Amino acid sequence: MVSAKDFQSSSPPTTEQPDALGRFGQFGGKYVPETLMPALSELETAFRQYRDDSGFQAELQELLREYVGRPTPLYLAERLTARYAKADGSGPQIYLKREDLNHTGAHKINNAIAQVLLARRMGKQRIIAETGAGQHGVATATACARFGVKCVIYMGVHDMDRQALNVFRMRLMGAEVIPVEAGNGTLKDATSESIRDWVTNVENTHYILGSVAGPHPYPMLVRDFHAVIGEETRTQAQQKWGGLPDIIMGCVGGGSNAMGIFHEFVDEPSVRLIGVEAGGEGIDSPKHAATLTGGEVGILHGAMSYLLQDEEGQIVEAHSISAGLDYPGVGPEHSYLKESQRAEYYNVTDEQALAAFERCSRLEGIIPALETAHAIAYLETLCPQLTGSPRIVINCSGRGDKDVQTAAKRLNPG
Image (tube, rainbow, N blue to C red; front, top):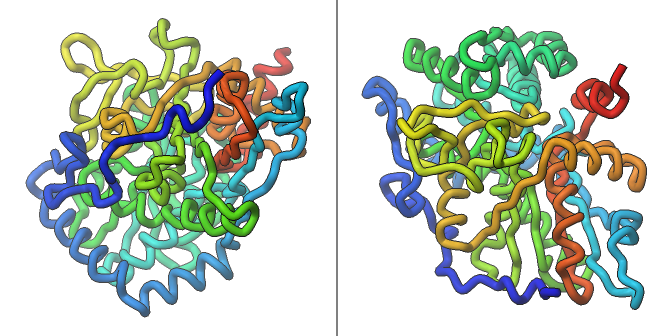
């Protein structure tokens, strides 16, 4: 048995990352066509100008409060906690950071609203985005509808099929959803098409990348727009028990929700950070999306990070029951946190995630997104290893309405 304190980090502080070149250690950077370099520089300049601008921040904070519905609760999941209680009454206390209660049902709206505000100040008249599970697409379509901005969403045909509800929601709010048939028709392919569009229309178009991936400054920008999750968690933990969480967990595909809650605590060595990837049908099979567990360093979509690739360096298609985790790369800061051993990364299978999806629904009356269910599933492995009564906070990154048809096919076949 181990205590959370056994995993306290002695790594140097990392919240000042990235460096001036947009790198987290060796990871990150800008590996893009020359035509995009001015756009990335323009975006970084605007971001640095407005993130500390009182007018921009006042408008953003009002929207987060009045439109998005922040702050989201830090909820003690009593029945999940009871499941892992020990005979002597000890056991971890499990809290859910309820990002599923945000407008549109996930954390994605934090970044989408902020980037649309930024794009308007940059004079961009057109917004494009990629989406996998559809939540980033819905959030972007929502923000664009709120401000009357033209919106184009690229989405893989496979994801459109399994996330039909979100496709309808995006179109209902006026977004043009463009099917992407290339590759496996999933998130990687939608991202590639978005970048092609941006190269072609860079003068009047802003690309709202949905995760902490891609070329600098996106990993930094998206992280900072989601950092409100961790900031609220710190305040709420102080209010509830007068201290910090012992363990913070989040699912990791590209990694925006995990980075949003991790960032506030990277310099707190007493807080153990755990990311949970999609193990698919098992990391010993060719069908998984556990990039940090089974990947190698390479370049994809403008940044260096861990990737799923073959012996010749070609990208291997990822697999997950969760459309939002079905990506063969990961954000460069997560790659850095893994290499520096500041964060730990594990994986669970499709079947384990489905079991957690059902378990959380029945024990807490909360239907989590299949992405979130991966983090909840890892409790089955983690909790038996722990001693005492550590406080675990799981970022409940989204609600599972979008996933009920996928889950129904697997849980009730025929």
